[in-house]
Image (cartoon, rainbow, N blue to C red; front, side, top):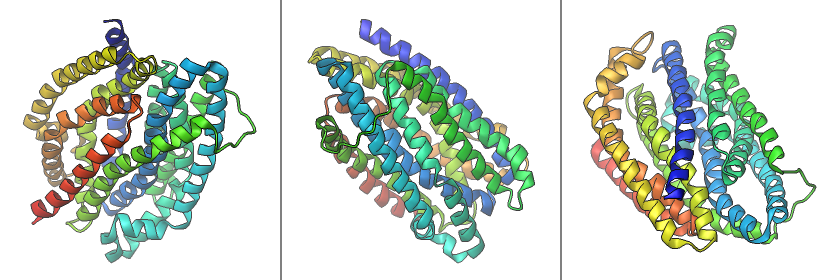
Amino acid sequence: MDSNKKVSEAAGAVGGMTLLSRLFGFLRDVVIAMAFGSSASADAFFVAFRIPNMQRRILGEGAVTAAFIPVFTETLTQKGEAAAWRMTANLFNILFIALSLASLFILIFSPAVITVFAPGFLDEPGKFELTVKLTRWMAPYLFFIGLAAFCMGILNSLKVFALPAATPILQNVMMILSVLIIAPLMDEPIMGLAIGVLVGGALQLLVQLPAVIKKGFRFEKTLNFKQEEVIKIAKLMGPVILGLAVYEINIMVDTLLASLLPGGSISYLYYGNRLVQLPLGVFAVALGVALLPTLSSQAAKGDLKELVQTVGFSIRLILFITIPATVGLIILREPIVNTLWERGEFLASTTEGTAIALLYYSIGLCAYSGIKIIAPAFYSLQDTKTPAKIGIYSMILNMVLNLILMG
């Protein structure tokens, strides 16, 4: 069908850029692994980077995008361009303030935040202090990347996919350059990586803004919290934030428990997760990104039959891809980790630990991928509560299994 073809083409564009971004991401991880391995400074960076990154996914890229695209599409379809852009300008200003406050919160309360995310670091004062320092340096990253994610949502709503999908490449390139060029000049080399993160986030916003303006967006001196569309988005965002927070809590719990295990455990989880994110990002996330605007348009027009057919096609497509990917990752986990990362400070013992993490992450690949298809279907229908409820159940199960399997 025509909609399936459009979704496939859009997913191909997003997937291609995502693949390129992930390749640069792996190169970034190779460079970081060679420079820092699974050292204390690497653990400190991964925890510090996870904090603004988590906030970004919840406030910017996740909740706002999931709630914004259906409402923007509905407004555009039913009220016209002028109303859609007025709503967008108002929401941009609201998000500007929210992200500024969130960044400031992280900057001020970094020690308390680190205590929650990695309590095991309290037993190692030097590691804890370094994590706090890195967190404060990277706090403004949340502001830049949150607005960049909002710009991505605007462009995706207008069926522009390639540019937003390509911007993470800038992040990876800046992090690579920071390790190679800036880190050697620093008293604490890992601080160079924090600078790369910050610059990369700013570039992602600056690259997308001209494209958004070209499409019709204009900055306006407006701040109306009572705007009808903003209220609707806020109501939709609540459950999405809860659902995404559940996912982040799962990661936080994993990190918290890993910080109580022998050194390097956090790095094992990080590198293992990075590997399983390749097929997830290139195929499932790409398809989900391409799917939401189309499903939102179908929902706005009341064409539910077409919507169901599009979702069914997408599920079949993603399973066709991820089932072989799962088998491949499980069978070849050690050779993959060895080939990609075992050099420099990344030792054979690190390969073994990472391969074990990859094994268990891979088992869930098909399910993770299915979520990326099913969730946009609910969001397009402006039902954000159902995915949130399912997320809560999964969080409880994750916590229970973590404690049981750790013994």
